[in-house]
Structures are given as C-alpha cells and as structure tokens.
Length: 419
Ligand SMILES: [Zn+2]
Image 1 (cartoon, rainbow, N blue to C red):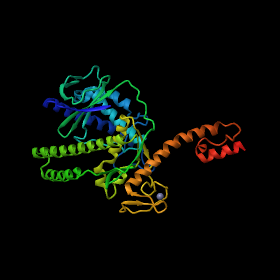
Image 2: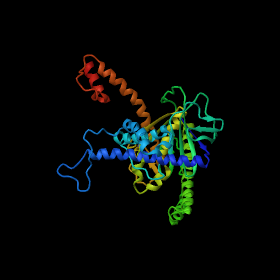
Image 3: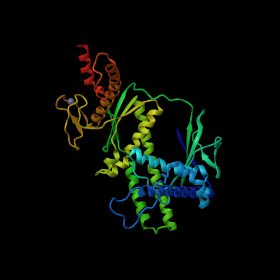
Image 4: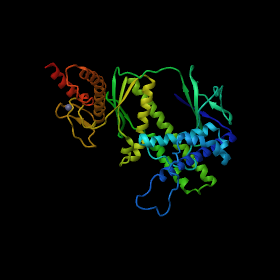
C-alpha cells in the first residue's frame, strides 16, 4: 500500500531536491537519446542515403539496455561530476523509470517515451532503506537529513517501509511511502449483492439499484477560476518574478482541483462498496471518447481515475470487482434483452416488447450487472465442460483445444459420445 504524507523541507533541502530532480531528468533524457540513436542507426532507406544526416554506429553495438546504462553510470559520473550529487540509487531509479517507459512502449502499447522538459521530472524514488526512515514526526532521507513530516495517520503495525517517493506538486512536497506486510491477501471471490455501474456525463453514475449521482458542480466553478488565473499568467513576462508567482498560483489551483476530484471519487467508491458486494463497470477507454465533442467534460470528470480508485477500494474492502464489455449497454433491455433504439436525448428506457420502463442510465447499469453475473457464472461453467469433454474416452479428440471452448461444440460432442 502507498500512504501519502505531506513533508516540510527547509529551503536548502528544497533546493537540493529540485536540483536532484533536474539531474535525474538530464540522465533520463541522455538515456533516451542513446536508445533513440541506436534505433535510428538500425534503419535506413533501401536505395539511398539520407541527405541531412546518417547515423554511424558499429553494427554490433549492443542495445543500450537497462543493465548497460546502469553499469555506465559510475564512469559517467567521472565525466559529469554533477551526477554525483544525487544519491546513486535515486539516479539509478531514473534510468529504471526510462526503461519501464520503454517496455511499456514495446509490450503494452503505450507511446514512445518522450524527452522531459525543464520541470517535468517531478518525483524522486528512494528505493531502499536499511532501517525505518520515519522517526517520530520526522523522515530521514540519505544526503538530505531530517525532514518534518505530517504523520496524519500512523503506519499500521506489522508494516515495513520499503520505498519512499518524494513528490513535488506546485510548491507543496509529499512523501509517498510504500509500506509492505508479509501477509497473503486472497483475491475477493464473487459473492453477495451485485451492482452494475454506468458512468456518464449527465449523471456522474447510475447503479443498477436505481441510485443516481449528479456530476459534481465544484469542478466547473474551479475551471472558470483556473481560466482567469491562466489568462493572467499569459500576460506576465516569461521567467520574470511575477510570472513565477503566478505560475505557482495556477499550479496550486490545478492541485486543488485534482484533490477535490479524487476525494469525490473515493467517497463515491466507498458508497458503492457500502451498498453492494460485487461491482461491475464498463471497460470503456475513456481517452478515445474524450477526443470527441464532449472532450473537456469527459476528462474533467476523470472516469478512468474513478474506475482505478473503485478497483482499489473494492480490493481493500474485500469486494469483488470486474470490468464488463461495454458494447451496446445503452441499447439492450435489462429485462428481456431486446435491442431498444433510442437517441441521445431520450432519458427514459421504455421497452416495447416487455413494457419495462426505467431511467436510461439505470437501465444500462442493470445491463452491466446482468452481464457481470453472466460472466462469473459462465467462467466456471466453460472450464468444467472443457475438462469434461476433452477427457471423455471414445470421443473424437482430434479437435483443437480452442474449439472445444465453445459450449455448443462441447454439447454436440457429448451427444455424439452418448450415442
Ligand atoms: Zn424488454
């Protein structure tokens, strides 16, 4: 688990933290440049040379992998003594962060890692501690010494501090403390009362039980305030003292908005867990939706974050959480499954074939709930039939494993076997 506390570094500590962040940023960028150069040197046009540049690198030059770059750090410190100012483990983490981003690009399908501009590297990770760094109301960090910490909630008994990440938001500093405990937490199993949750713009969420929560208004109010501050910022001369002052004001407001939204999301997630034991949500990628006309509003509501938070809260409280395929949830009738066409403005779901009438968002919440229940019940089902059908002697086993996964095929074969 991660607990976040506010810390209060003094001016010299703050200065060195900022300095370290910049050094880590430079190291990160250097590493990324190496990767990019290597990649570029592996490709060229088939029939001609490029006019403006050509990468000359030996063909057997190894890829600047994580291990290679980490091993290069000690010698790099001799050339750039500035690197030595940062605790070496923290610097290593910057390189590791780069390679995590690279892996994300290679395997998960995230974007290509980008160069970080001045001020874009905002956290430092202290990965290891020999002894508990928190002593009473202070936190002790290597090379920095003692920093006062606001320990607003105690670290629970039996937990050990593993890592500390120092985060800078506006002019506020936080320590996100990763604590671990040697206990195996079993995955929550499906049980109890199911809830389907539909997220939307008109209403923040609608559950299958008929609960409707309105979109929070406070964000809109704060947005207009932010707009004002940003306009003022744009009129200041860049890099002047006034510009810096105004920049911090804007950053602080952004931070407040973030916090308020997060608080709202946590409260909603807890209310969901209060009422139900299984929570189902759509697996929509809200980023693609936000590109459309409703973009700003979509991002404003932060649906992706809400889903992540709900997942976490469910895990913490031992409730079952599952994402459900979202295709056509707003069209299907939750009672009879018939497709009911309706345009965006229709707020009521009314089914012509079974005469079921309810709020539109509640209806899609119910569809999500039904699909969720179906998913958990069939997940067990298919597995059983699969093993049964494959192991049955006398049946044609030549069929591939993947084919027998469908229930129909399994049933068919079973009837052949019994005949
Ligand atoms: Zn119906």
